[in-house]
Length: 337
Image 1 (cartoon, rainbow, N blue to C red):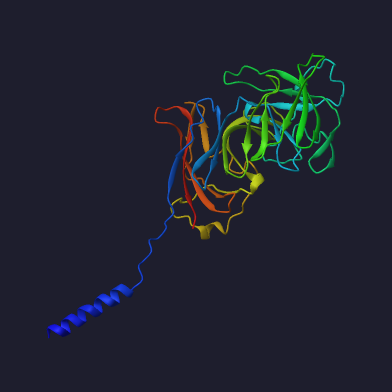
Image 2 (image 1 turned 60 degrees about the vertical axis):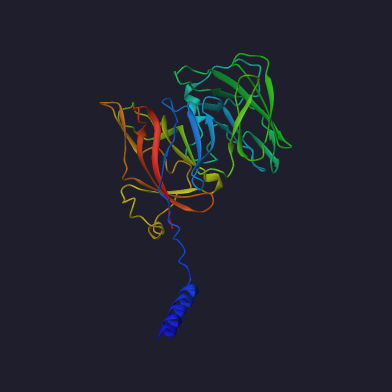
């Protein structure tokens, strides 16, 4: 009897050792993130959803122009986070004295439309990444600092793009001499930033592929009548929001009201995604004029396809930090599987 019992016990042990171990289920993790832009929204945060980490932090006051740094890129952009504008005078006379014309000002469309930038087609493409300039003088409004003091005006000529180097000349509106600067393209950056001051200092750049969302102040444009404002066809206006890395394939779908916790990857298949740079935008919060307070709408749900092609769901929960200071957007984000 004892032998039979031992055999049964041995059999049980053998069978148990042959059973496959259950692998732990890799569940998606809900992350809560706060972006410390600051009360004057002074910092631009480039955020990577895959690593749940910041790829780059840049002061929005430290640059004026951005130059495409990709191999075939040639476009020049202005810093909309400072409320900058520019326009083409149509003149090639740099040493002339110019007066800035507010009515002619142009901007970079916030949706990222590359055919609608303030500098536009500044020259003729002679080969990929090589441009011969039309020599036109552009007048640039450099926008405002945190105290709403103006950075002033400059006249600018983009001279050329050759062998991966931009040449640019700039000066005051009444100057007869120019400061000429070389801005080289840089590996690992979509755009290289420079300031129209300090001898054209190259200050920083917009990283390439390592980010999905840019938390920043930017210039939004209202088209048509805007309640509370004088009649106008267009109204450029400063907002605080999120721009996406649309150049590297990030797309966004917005749902005005949805259950964040219940939303699944299968639900995302029925959505329409936008490749616009401002698809996530700024209207995840509302401003109450009576108490000058921002209130976040947690029912708005954003589905984001990252640079790597991974889908995430995101909702905002707060715009203030624990001390009650604005400029600290907080959101919940979770990978969809």
